[in-house]
Amino acid sequence: MLIRNKDPRRPEDLSALNLSLRKMGWSLLSALGGRRLVRKLYPEKTLCFFDAKQHPGVTGYVAFTIDDAFCGEDNPGGSMLADVLELLGEYGVRATFFVAGTHCDEDSAKLIPELLAAGHELANHNLEDRPYHLETKEDFLKDLDATEAAITHLGAKTAPWYRAPHAKFSKAMEGALEERDLSHVMVDCFANDTAIPDPNFICQTILNSVCDGSIVLIHMPEKNMREWNLQAMRDTLSGIRQKGLQAVTVSELVAKARS
Image (cartoon, rainbow, N blue to C red; front, side, top):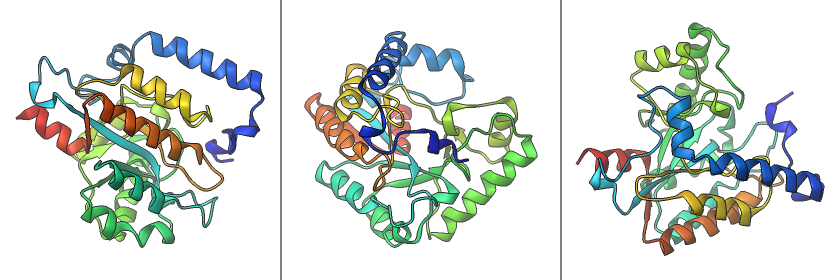
């Protein structure tokens, strides 16, 4: 069974009580502080945000990232990449798409030239939407390289970034990434959008913590699968703009941090 089969596909898949409990649990976790948590849970080399006091170049900027691009093999014809690209263009945003190798569907592949021409970038999110932290280094590298090949087949060059599916990371993965000269990228602004089908909650949770140098995550919407995330993206991008922040790719944010 795919891990995502355990997630709601439509808002009505959850009872009001279940939804309320999920929101409560995530709100309590968020209260601990996203930046504090990621620094405790991941190696020092992991990119998760930039402190504007230490990196003044990031002032006014955040990175906008999208996981599970583009469309799962279990959802043929479900690609919403065209909708996402239109939305990003409307707000003048450039995003980093973390691509799962098994999500490189034909409908999305047709739009890759348009995606790249708009200044977006593609990065590695492993072959399948599942945790890899219990894999051997060799098995992990096999799937990592397979995803690289899938992205290359789309006619794109990957950015030097990697994000661990389900936020599960291990020493073996860390060593493998060093061999491939990839950096692990986590986030400080996320709202468990795969499990909480409420665009307003997702938006407000992210906006409550977003600031200069943040890395924001919203998962890729698909038709009949996390479709609410398109509205969550719209509301979040609107809120980011109202805060006087500009959303860019991870590569652009890193360059500004180093300037």
